[in-house]
Image (cartoon, rainbow, N blue to C red; front, side, top):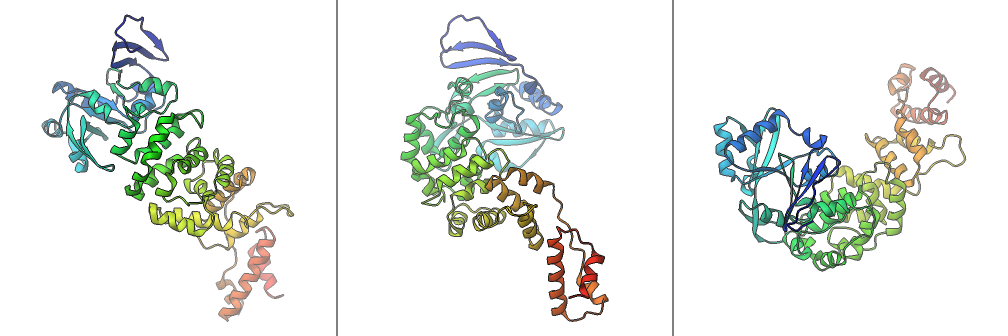
Length: 431
């Protein structure tokens, strides 16, 4: 495939395969997903780069998605033009530029026909410290591909549909293999977050849970300590995506085996068997990342320690604390006709606005598929009696009003929330 020999081109699912040189594999993409990218905005940007004789190609994840027959959510572009050349080009054409924060890294964002186009100059890393890189610009596409993390993320796609693959990324994608570009250890040492990116993409691409290359696992284990210097926010962004991907239980177990867990806030003695059980229960029910991760926690202190390391949101922290507290004691009723009653009663008694969402996550955690379907359809009823109603009946003591309201609420709950206001107020005389 990689030699300069004459081969008959082959068309597979709209992809025209070509072989050019020893170090570059190319093919022609003509799928509907690719064609749909060509909006008026992209056509205008493409014409501008062509006019000024700069190359422009699609880069990174969008290429991977297109090769998998998926419509990419975001499309990033790479170019031989420098940021200054792009700015001059866009200004001369009257194209607005936004968000100049990326300019120091070589990225210019242009806005045309209500679309944003993020274009980055080809780069090589000059100095890396495991977190950040000092870069210099280049016009060499292979050198830019060489600095990327995984082979499946190192490909470019020309706007004529030509794929440029320098590191076997297409073959790895076809075979669902996760490989670093070149030396795994070198790529990881350039940015230790790539350890977690490996896990995330493994969960997205790989078919089987244990299909790792030994040298990759060895490189991860030898360099896991580098994650200690990575910010919690960056770690959590990657970990969240891993937790809701395929093979999540396997990948978290691997984090423990490879000494990664201790550097990213996971509990030292995390309950891996509970995690496997919960992931099996919830994986196909769209769980939140914290729902899966909570299975590792043995108590609320584990949630607090995770928050200190990863700076999770208040909502995520509260969900973790809720699941740890109620996963054992708030369960379906075994001896009542309404199995959901304990959960409904909890919601009615709670003053928290998002409690129904938390109950749904608890049901996913517990593997209660049928109850989850019922809970998602349930509308929280409104207790029909207020203190104002009791004052109209001549009851003025605040303490008495509170006691009566609680008694009426208990009657209402016992009826399955069926008793109406008039019936409840009749009962006040008998209290």
